[in-house]
Length: 213
Image 1 (cartoon, helix red, strand yellow):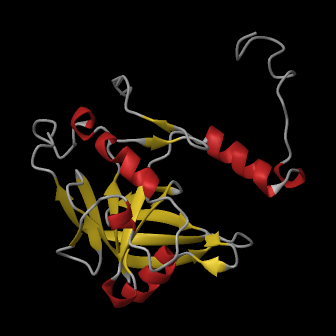
Image 2 (cartoon, helix red, strand yellow; image 1 turned 90 degrees about the vertical axis):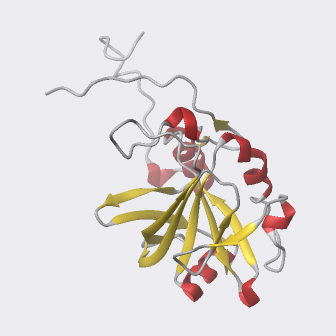
Image 3 (cartoon, rainbow, N blue to C red; image 1 turned 60 degrees about the vertical axis):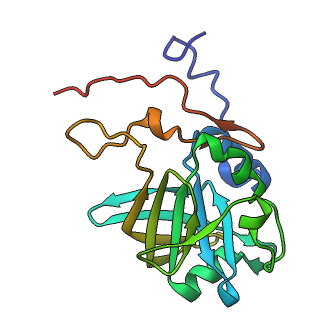
C-alpha cells in the first residue's frame, strides 16, 4: 500500500510524544528530521584555548538580518564548553562541514575534557576570525563569523537556543557561484548532512524543480 491509497491512513503508526521516553523521542526526531545541516561551532575557551564541536540542531533562521541558530544541550549536569565560551566571548564561528572534513568533524564530536584542543585532536589548524572573537577551521570551504544575537530558553528542555548574527563570511576561492547570483554551487561545496547515530549523508544527486508561478 502506498501513501494516499485508501486504508493507508488507518494503518498509520500513531505515537503520543508525551508517552514515550526521552531516548525514544530523540531517536524518532533525529531519524525523521533528516538530513540536518551540521553547525561545526568553533569558539575560544579560557586562555584562548580553541574549542570545536559539531551540532546537528543547527539551521538558518533569517537572511535580513542574517541569523543562524544552534541548539546546545548539556554534558550531564554541566554546560557544554561551547555554550560557556559563547557566553564569555559573545561570538562563535559556524564552519560548514564538507566531504573532505567528515572524518575530522567526527573526531571533534568526542566527549573530552575542556582543556583538550579538539583542533589538535583532529589534526586541524585554528585561525583567528577577522570579524569576531572566535577561531575558525583553516581550509574550511565556508565559515560564518557570528556575534551572539540572542539566547532563548527552550522551556523544560535542557537545551539552549543560541542565535548568532552572521557579520562576516570566509569562502574558499575555489567555490563557484551560480552566474549572476550569490548562490554557492552545491556541487562545489559538497556539504555533509546529519542523519541518526553514526550515519551521515553526502550530497548525492541534485534535483532542480522550478517553483510554480
